[in-house]
Length: 317
Image (cartoon, rainbow, N blue to C red):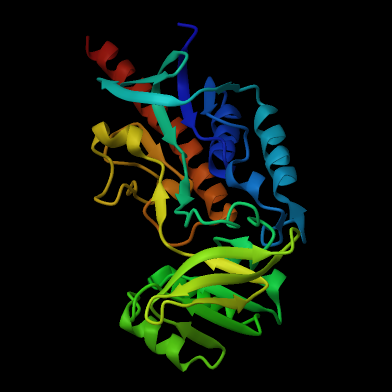
């Protein structure tokens, strides 16, 4: 029974920590699991300036504050990589690389990762000019030249967003036309700050060991190496949900995201999904926190419903 919990939350990002706070303060026995340090992608963000209550705060500092708030109500926190999740009636069985746990209510907050180019300079300059979120980081490049890599909806939407602050936005795409929906293309082509480089294979992000200075690419038509000067590089070549371990549960869509209703319910009763792992458009700390508060409260409501059913059955018996 030591490893049996009322609620288990997988993922200790802003959504998972908020769900922990709400579930634990409802006097539930709560376990939060993560394969790494709490805070999620906040730990990879230098400055956050779009979270209410703080004009500016370091990502790891915000993660620490959220963690301390959640731990005030004495949940358990354990490190471990989840290997399998299986169902046995109302019971959910979670096996990690080191242990096994059971619960009636499971909250999934494993998040999503931006697909990487895996080129020289990308990892080295992440947080120092390389970004995967214009909404998060556009303000740091006011009146600067920036590059957007990609040609889909996200790349063009974020390019348009960047153009409100940046001096110029150069979109580099490996093909000869965009994949974004026509209405976005129309807006982008009409934007005087936006420029386009076609048939280009980005090969390197260059800098001065402190910050980004430009992008080196191969012009696939001429075969020549070229450089675009830039203070910032925004990469949009896709986002991948961290949901492989949940494939057997039947809660994923065709792209691996987890659809939910407005109360964070998935297709399986007692399994909730929150934050970036959900099928949605905006992925920000603020709405992950909102998801987490709903998920934590709905887990409590779900357990109360199970208890009511037990009482009704006992009464009828």
